[in-house]
Structure formats: C-alpha cells, structure tokens
Length: 164
Image 1 (cartoon, rainbow, N blue to C red):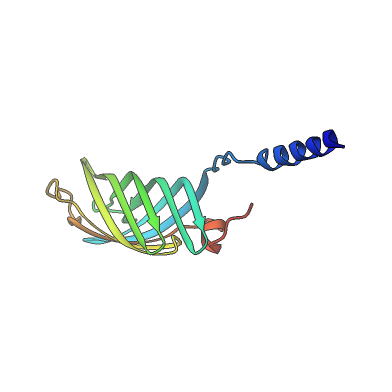
Image 2: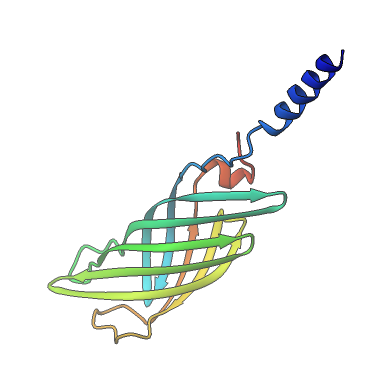
C-alpha cells in the first residue's frame, strides 16, 4: 500500500511540473498600413509592417519594422516618390517611430531621418509628428516638419484581442 501511495504522489507531482513552462515563441504578425502625411504638401503613404503584437489584459503593444513608399501623385516636374524603412513601437496610447526616407524628385535625391512621436488608438490608428534636424530640405515642397496619420490593418490589432 505504501508503494502505491508513493507511486501516486510521484505521478501527480511530476504531472503538475511537466506542464508547458517554456513560453512558446510569438509568431510574427503582418499589417498593411496606409496613411496621409503632411510635409509641406500632402503625400500618401503605403507601408507593410512585420512585428510582434503583445497583449496583457487591457494593455496592447506592438513592435514592428516598416517598409513602404510615399508619393504625392503629381504628374509633372513636382512628382515625388520616396521609398522608406523604419522601426515603430506603439504601446496603448503612445507611438514612437524612427523612419529613414529617400526622396526622389526629377534628378534630385535626398535621404532624411525622421524621429517621430505621437498618439495611438490601441495601435490601430496613429497620429505622429516628426522633425528632421539633420539637413536642409533641398527638394521643392518638402518641410522639416511632418505630421502623419496612419491606419494599421491587422485583425488581431484592430480587435484588440489575440486569437490563440
């Protein structure tokens, strides 16, 4: 009888400690992020984001790498196209972004780095302000200041819940 009780104690104690204690690696999430930028004039932006979304009770945040393009959609000598890459962190109501953008207009090409900070609506909608203090704007129609409004389209982020 003692052997049976000892066997049951060992069996149940090992079962309790054998549960999944190693956290599962989080999968990367993808989001499409269109938006509007005011930087001297209006630009449309189209971004693709890859990162991780974290949710703990009422707190949701994401960390992502962004790649995309901005354009002003003009069909004359004022046409601007700008590929860009950046890093973004958004937590509940705050967003921080660092973006490197290379603007092309006719034969002119200029690279700018914009640190941006803003407010966020749970990571789904971001309103940011950025300032380029590194160099003067040599392309017509650009300013050192930029205000951006972007919408992150991701099912998990927009619902505010993670599906397991």
